[in-house]
Length: 219
Image (cartoon, rainbow, N blue to C red; front, side, top):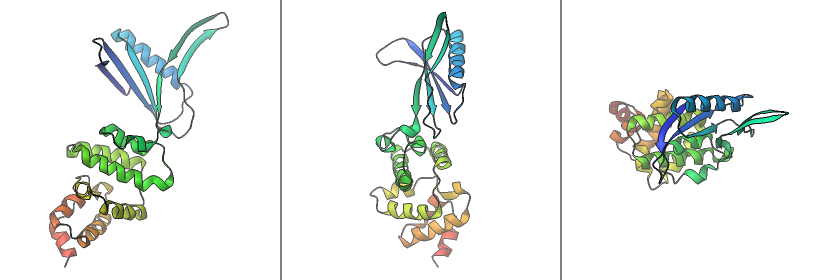
């Protein structure tokens, strides 16, 4: 099982177990697997369980229940909640202060023409949350895995960020472009930031380049 949490429902004292199962591809027997997980959890804890399947694949197919029935008798119907990310409008979540919502923007429903806008809003969300660097890198890494802009799109994104009121906070995010593992990319971005008159210290923190390297670019 991927995620199992014991928690409380609002305004109730009873403890419940929440089981969340992310699913990245369609599987014919997935509904049966959800029932097996439910059975194992209930057998061990004997507490109310809320089962949730989070679908991250492109197909529209969703499974919500598992049935066991015979011509002479219906044994059971097991229902579980579902969240199909591709059916979610990413714009509905950009006001959220939830790191998980920010990361999952990359798997929600958006068009090709909205890719740059999605990443810009993701960076804005990340800057506002003021998470520690380790969590920022984790969330950024997840987002980049599923929504990776090409060089042209990245350049357009840079231009969009410059126009933002909170651009300074985004530049200061310690995720930087070292995550891409390409020094050439970092150097290109550093040169653009120098042209904008940003400080060597800020550029260093943003790109991961040494201050001396950045100063030589400005010579």
